[in-house]
Amino acid sequence: MSLDMSPLSEWLNARDDGPIAVVTHRNGDMDTIGSGVILARAIEGARACGLYIGTLARKMTEGMELGFMQIDADRPAFPRSIAGIIVVDCASPGQIGFQLPDAPLCVVDHHSSASDPWPDGTTIIRGEVSSTAEMVWEWVKASKHLPNSKYELTSEDATLLLAAIISDTGRFKHSRAGCHRRVEEISEASGVDPADVIEQMETEDLNHSQRISILKAVSRSQSHEAGGLVVAMTRASTHEGMVAHALLSAGAHVGLVHKKTPDGMRVTARASRTATELGVDVGALMKAMATRLGGEGGGHPGAAGWSGQCHPVELESSLLAALSTEMVE
Image (cartoon, rainbow, N blue to C red; front, side, top):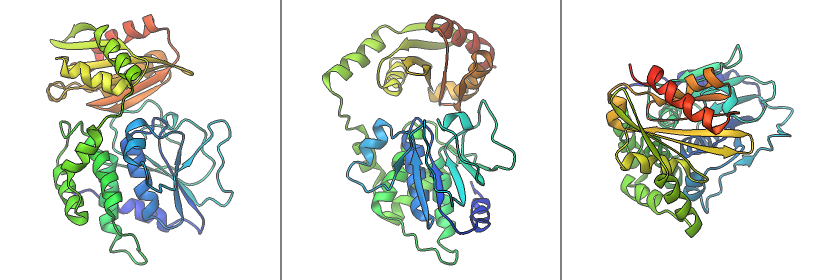
Protein backbone atom coordinates (compact mmCIF):
# COMPACT_ATOMS: atom_id res chain seq x y z
CA MET A 1 0.00 0.00 0.00
CA SER A 2 1.42 3.37 -1.05
CA LEU A 3 1.60 6.16 1.50
CA ASP A 4 2.01 9.79 0.46
CA MET A 5 4.24 11.61 2.94
CA SER A 6 4.89 14.61 0.67
CA PRO A 7 2.73 16.89 2.89
CA LEU A 8 5.41 16.57 5.57
CA SER A 9 8.11 17.71 3.14
CA GLU A 10 5.88 20.57 2.00
CA TRP A 11 5.24 21.62 5.62
CA LEU A 12 8.98 21.55 6.38
CA ASN A 13 9.82 23.53 3.25
CA ALA A 14 7.36 26.23 4.32
CA ARG A 15 9.07 26.77 7.68
CA ASP A 16 11.40 29.69 8.27
CA ASP A 17 14.90 29.02 9.51
CA GLY A 18 14.82 27.85 13.10
CA PRO A 19 14.67 24.69 15.22
CA ILE A 20 11.96 22.05 14.82
CA ALA A 21 10.64 20.19 17.88
CA VAL A 22 9.49 16.60 17.34
CA VAL A 23 7.14 15.88 20.25
CA THR A 24 6.23 12.39 21.50
CA HIS A 25 3.13 11.48 23.51
CA ARG A 26 3.18 11.25 27.28
CA ASN A 27 3.12 7.44 27.57
CA GLY A 28 6.44 7.17 25.77
CA ASP A 29 5.81 3.83 24.07
CA MET A 30 8.15 2.30 21.51
CA ASP A 31 6.32 3.67 18.46
CA THR A 32 6.24 7.30 19.57
CA ILE A 33 9.85 7.28 20.83
CA GLY A 34 11.26 5.40 17.83
CA SER A 35 9.31 7.54 15.36
CA GLY A 36 10.19 10.79 17.11
CA VAL A 37 13.90 10.07 17.44
CA ILE A 38 14.35 8.91 13.83
CA LEU A 39 12.32 11.79 12.41
CA ALA A 40 14.36 14.29 14.43
CA ARG A 41 17.60 12.71 13.22
CA ALA A 42 16.43 12.95 9.61
CA ILE A 43 15.44 16.64 9.82
CA GLU A 44 18.27 19.13 10.07
CA GLY A 45 17.87 21.34 13.13
CA ALA A 46 15.24 19.11 14.77
CA ARG A 47 15.19 17.57 18.23
CA ALA A 48 12.94 14.93 19.77
CA CYS A 49 11.32 15.71 23.10
CA GLY A 50 8.52 14.57 25.38
CA LEU A 51 7.48 13.82 28.94
CA TYR A 52 8.55 10.22 29.27
CA ILE A 53 10.34 7.23 27.76
CA GLY A 54 8.47 4.01 28.53
CA THR A 55 9.95 0.76 29.79
CA LEU A 56 10.38 -0.99 26.42
CA ALA A 57 11.63 2.15 24.68
CA ARG A 58 14.11 2.74 27.49
CA LYS A 59 15.32 -0.83 27.16
CA MET A 60 15.72 -0.66 23.37
CA THR A 61 17.51 2.71 23.49
CA GLU A 62 19.90 1.81 26.31
CA GLY A 63 23.42 2.96 25.44
CA MET A 64 22.23 5.09 22.51
CA GLU A 65 22.81 8.83 22.15
CA LEU A 66 19.19 9.76 21.51
CA GLY A 67 19.37 13.53 21.74
CA PHE A 68 15.97 13.28 23.43
CA MET A 69 15.01 16.18 25.69
CA GLN A 70 12.72 15.37 28.61
CA ILE A 71 10.04 18.02 29.13
CA ASP A 72 8.85 19.32 32.49
CA ALA A 73 5.04 19.26 32.24
CA ASP A 74 4.71 22.23 34.60
CA ARG A 75 7.34 24.33 32.86
CA PRO A 76 7.75 23.20 29.23
CA ALA A 77 10.67 25.08 27.71
CA PHE A 78 11.02 25.61 23.95
CA PRO A 79 13.29 27.94 21.98
CA ARG A 80 11.75 31.34 21.28
CA SER A 81 12.91 31.02 17.69
CA ILE A 82 11.13 27.69 17.14
CA ALA A 83 10.05 27.30 13.51
CA GLY A 84 7.51 24.53 14.02
CA ILE A 85 6.40 21.48 16.00
CA ILE A 86 5.81 17.96 14.71
CA VAL A 87 3.79 15.69 17.00
CA VAL A 88 4.24 11.97 16.34
CA ASP A 89 2.01 9.00 17.12
CA CYS A 90 -0.47 11.11 19.06
CA ALA A 91 -4.19 11.06 18.28
CA SER A 92 -5.16 14.20 20.20
CA PRO A 93 -3.61 17.18 22.05
CA GLY A 94 -4.55 15.76 25.44
CA GLN A 95 -2.19 12.83 24.91
CA ILE A 96 0.88 15.10 24.81
CA GLY A 97 0.71 15.88 28.53
CA PHE A 98 1.76 19.53 28.42
CA GLN A 99 0.86 22.78 26.68
CA LEU A 100 2.55 23.35 23.35
CA PRO A 101 3.85 26.82 22.48
CA ASP A 102 2.18 28.83 19.74
CA ALA A 103 3.96 27.63 16.61
CA PRO A 104 3.09 26.00 13.26
CA LEU A 105 1.92 22.47 14.05
CA CYS A 106 2.10 19.20 12.09
CA VAL A 107 0.77 15.85 13.30
CA VAL A 108 2.08 12.53 11.96
CA ASP A 109 -0.12 9.73 13.26
CA HIS A 110 -1.83 6.46 12.42
CA HIS A 111 -4.54 6.22 15.10
CA SER A 112 -8.15 5.98 13.98
CA SER A 113 -9.84 7.22 17.17
CA ALA A 114 -9.31 10.31 19.32
CA SER A 115 -11.30 12.19 21.95
CA ASP A 116 -10.37 15.82 21.24
CA PRO A 117 -9.48 17.73 18.05
CA TRP A 118 -6.27 19.46 17.02
CA PRO A 119 -6.26 23.29 16.72
CA ASP A 120 -7.44 24.89 13.50
CA GLY A 121 -4.63 25.23 11.00
CA THR A 122 -2.84 22.04 12.07
CA THR A 123 -1.39 19.99 9.23
CA ILE A 124 -2.59 16.46 9.96
CA ILE A 125 -0.94 13.55 8.15
CA ARG A 126 -2.77 10.37 9.09
CA GLY A 127 -1.86 7.06 7.51
CA GLU A 128 -3.89 3.86 7.23
CA VAL A 129 -0.94 1.87 8.53
CA SER A 130 -0.06 -0.29 11.54
CA SER A 131 2.37 2.13 13.16
CA THR A 132 3.66 5.68 12.94
CA ALA A 133 7.16 4.26 12.39
CA GLU A 134 6.00 3.02 8.99
CA MET A 135 5.01 6.57 8.07
CA VAL A 136 8.41 7.84 9.19
CA TRP A 137 10.12 5.17 7.10
CA GLU A 138 8.11 6.12 4.01
CA TRP A 139 9.11 9.76 4.47
CA VAL A 140 12.77 8.84 5.08
CA LYS A 141 12.79 6.81 1.84
CA ALA A 142 11.30 9.69 -0.15
CA SER A 143 13.43 12.38 1.48
CA LYS A 144 16.65 10.64 0.47
CA HIS A 145 15.99 11.93 -3.04
CA LEU A 146 15.34 15.51 -1.93
CA PRO A 147 17.99 18.22 -2.30
CA ASN A 148 20.28 18.69 0.73
CA SER A 149 19.23 15.40 2.32
CA LYS A 150 22.12 14.05 4.42
CA TYR A 151 20.34 11.36 6.43
CA GLU A 152 21.53 7.76 6.17
CA LEU A 153 19.77 4.90 7.93
CA THR A 154 22.04 3.28 10.53
CA SER A 155 21.64 -0.13 12.15
CA GLU A 156 20.74 1.68 15.39
CA ASP A 157 17.99 3.65 13.67
CA ALA A 158 16.72 0.54 11.91
CA THR A 159 16.51 -1.27 15.24
CA LEU A 160 14.34 1.52 16.65
CA LEU A 161 12.04 1.55 13.62
CA LEU A 162 11.67 -2.23 13.61
CA ALA A 163 11.05 -2.36 17.37
CA ALA A 164 8.39 0.33 16.97
CA ILE A 165 6.61 -1.58 14.22
CA ILE A 166 6.88 -4.94 15.99
CA SER A 167 5.61 -3.46 19.25
CA ASP A 168 2.66 -1.54 17.80
CA THR A 169 1.48 -4.49 15.71
CA GLY A 170 1.61 -6.91 18.64
CA ARG A 171 4.35 -8.99 16.98
CA PHE A 172 2.55 -8.50 13.61
CA LYS A 173 -0.81 -9.83 14.85
CA HIS A 174 -2.44 -6.49 13.98
CA SER A 175 -0.34 -5.59 10.95
CA ARG A 176 -1.99 -3.89 8.00
CA ALA A 177 -1.27 -4.07 4.30
CA GLY A 178 2.26 -2.96 3.49
CA CYS A 179 3.67 -3.57 6.96
CA HIS A 180 5.72 -6.66 6.09
CA ARG A 181 7.07 -5.01 2.96
CA ARG A 182 8.29 -2.03 5.00
CA VAL A 183 9.90 -4.31 7.57
CA GLU A 184 11.71 -6.11 4.75
CA GLU A 185 12.86 -2.78 3.24
CA ILE A 186 14.24 -1.55 6.58
CA SER A 187 16.01 -4.86 7.13
CA GLU A 188 17.54 -4.89 3.64
CA ALA A 189 18.65 -1.26 3.92
CA SER A 190 20.36 -1.78 7.27
CA GLY A 191 21.27 -5.46 7.59
CA VAL A 192 19.29 -5.66 10.84
CA ASP A 193 17.33 -8.92 11.24
CA PRO A 194 13.82 -8.41 12.69
CA ALA A 195 14.20 -11.70 14.55
CA ASP A 196 17.16 -10.26 16.47
CA VAL A 197 15.09 -7.20 17.35
CA ILE A 198 12.25 -9.38 18.65
CA GLU A 199 14.69 -11.39 20.76
CA GLN A 200 16.08 -8.18 22.26
CA MET A 201 12.57 -6.91 22.98
CA GLU A 202 11.51 -10.13 24.68
CA THR A 203 14.45 -10.22 27.07
CA GLU A 204 12.56 -8.78 30.02
CA ASP A 205 14.48 -7.42 33.00
CA LEU A 206 11.75 -7.65 35.64
CA ASN A 207 12.65 -7.66 39.29
CA HIS A 208 11.02 -10.01 41.80
CA SER A 209 8.41 -7.55 43.04
CA GLN A 210 7.37 -6.64 39.47
CA ARG A 211 6.86 -10.29 38.58
CA ILE A 212 4.74 -10.81 41.70
CA SER A 213 2.67 -7.71 40.95
CA ILE A 214 1.98 -8.85 37.39
CA LEU A 215 0.98 -12.35 38.52
CA LYS A 216 -1.33 -10.92 41.19
CA ALA A 217 -3.00 -8.64 38.66
CA VAL A 218 -3.68 -11.58 36.35
CA SER A 219 -4.92 -13.80 39.20
CA ARG A 220 -7.53 -11.28 40.37
CA SER A 221 -8.96 -10.69 36.88
CA GLN A 222 -12.68 -11.10 36.29
CA SER A 223 -14.19 -12.37 33.06
CA HIS A 224 -17.31 -11.06 31.34
CA GLU A 225 -19.10 -11.72 28.05
CA ALA A 226 -19.91 -9.04 25.51
CA GLY A 227 -21.44 -9.97 22.18
CA GLY A 228 -20.16 -13.52 22.49
CA LEU A 229 -16.60 -12.40 23.25
CA VAL A 230 -14.71 -13.02 26.49
CA VAL A 231 -13.52 -9.85 28.18
CA ALA A 232 -11.08 -9.99 31.10
CA MET A 233 -10.69 -7.02 33.43
CA THR A 234 -8.32 -6.38 36.30
CA ARG A 235 -6.38 -3.69 38.16
CA ALA A 236 -2.61 -3.48 38.18
CA SER A 237 0.13 -1.50 39.85
CA THR A 238 2.79 -1.93 37.16
CA HIS A 239 3.34 -3.05 33.55
CA GLU A 240 -0.31 -2.76 32.50
CA GLY A 241 0.53 -3.63 28.90
CA MET A 242 2.14 -6.90 29.92
CA VAL A 243 -0.83 -7.72 32.15
CA ALA A 244 -3.25 -7.05 29.29
CA HIS A 245 -1.28 -9.31 26.94
CA ALA A 246 -1.21 -12.00 29.64
CA LEU A 247 -5.01 -11.85 29.80
CA LEU A 248 -5.18 -12.41 26.04
CA SER A 249 -2.74 -15.31 26.32
CA ALA A 250 -4.99 -16.82 29.00
CA GLY A 251 -7.90 -16.91 26.54
CA ALA A 252 -9.61 -13.51 26.65
CA HIS A 253 -10.58 -11.77 23.43
CA VAL A 254 -10.17 -8.38 25.12
CA GLY A 255 -7.99 -7.45 28.11
CA LEU A 256 -8.76 -4.31 30.13
CA VAL A 257 -6.35 -3.19 32.87
CA HIS A 258 -6.86 -0.12 35.03
CA LYS A 259 -4.38 1.59 37.31
CA LYS A 260 -4.36 4.50 39.73
CA THR A 261 -2.04 7.32 38.72
CA PRO A 262 -1.10 10.63 40.35
CA ASP A 263 -3.60 12.31 38.00
CA GLY A 264 -6.49 9.86 38.46
CA MET A 265 -7.03 6.59 36.61
CA ARG A 266 -5.63 5.02 33.47
CA VAL A 267 -7.01 2.14 31.39
CA THR A 268 -4.92 0.01 29.05
CA ALA A 269 -6.89 -2.02 26.50
CA ARG A 270 -5.72 -4.82 24.22
CA ALA A 271 -7.70 -6.96 21.76
CA SER A 272 -6.72 -10.20 20.08
CA ARG A 273 -6.53 -10.52 16.31
CA THR A 274 -9.64 -12.72 16.40
CA ALA A 275 -11.52 -9.94 18.19
CA THR A 276 -10.46 -7.19 15.79
CA GLU A 277 -11.40 -9.37 12.80
CA LEU A 278 -14.86 -9.69 14.36
CA GLY A 279 -15.16 -5.92 14.52
CA VAL A 280 -13.80 -5.05 17.94
CA ASP A 281 -12.10 -1.63 18.08
CA VAL A 282 -10.71 -0.77 21.51
CA GLY A 283 -9.62 2.61 20.15
CA ALA A 284 -13.28 3.46 19.57
CA LEU A 285 -14.08 2.05 23.02
CA MET A 286 -11.56 4.33 24.72
CA LYS A 287 -12.89 7.30 22.75
CA ALA A 288 -16.38 6.40 23.97
CA MET A 289 -15.05 6.29 27.53
CA ALA A 290 -13.85 9.88 27.14
CA THR A 291 -17.35 10.86 25.99
CA ARG A 292 -18.91 9.09 28.98
CA LEU A 293 -16.47 10.08 31.71
CA GLY A 294 -14.39 12.93 30.36
CA GLY A 295 -10.62 12.67 30.23
CA GLU A 296 -8.96 11.62 27.01
CA GLY A 297 -8.86 8.34 25.18
CA GLY A 298 -8.24 6.70 21.83
CA GLY A 299 -5.95 4.39 19.96
CA HIS A 300 -6.38 1.77 17.30
CA PRO A 301 -8.39 -1.47 17.09
CA GLY A 302 -5.91 -3.73 18.86
CA ALA A 303 -4.39 -1.39 21.45
CA ALA A 304 -5.67 1.77 23.10
CA GLY A 305 -5.92 3.67 26.37
CA TRP A 306 -7.95 6.14 28.43
CA SER A 307 -6.96 8.41 31.30
CA GLY A 308 -9.02 10.70 33.51
CA GLN A 309 -10.76 11.13 36.85
CA CYS A 310 -13.08 8.34 37.96
CA HIS A 311 -13.79 6.06 40.93
CA PRO A 312 -12.56 2.49 40.19
CA VAL A 313 -16.03 0.96 40.68
CA GLU A 314 -17.63 3.48 38.33
CA LEU A 315 -14.81 2.96 35.87
CA GLU A 316 -15.36 -0.79 35.69
CA SER A 317 -19.13 -0.45 35.26
CA SER A 318 -18.62 2.20 32.57
CA LEU A 319 -16.21 -0.04 30.71
CA LEU A 320 -18.71 -2.89 30.70
CA ALA A 321 -21.50 -0.58 29.57
CA ALA A 322 -19.34 0.81 26.77
CA LEU A 323 -18.37 -2.70 25.72
CA SER A 324 -21.95 -3.68 25.01
CA THR A 325 -22.75 -0.52 23.05
CA GLU A 326 -19.49 0.54 21.39
CA MET A 327 -17.23 -2.47 20.82
CA VAL A 328 -19.35 -5.08 19.12
CA GLU A 329 -21.53 -4.17 16.19
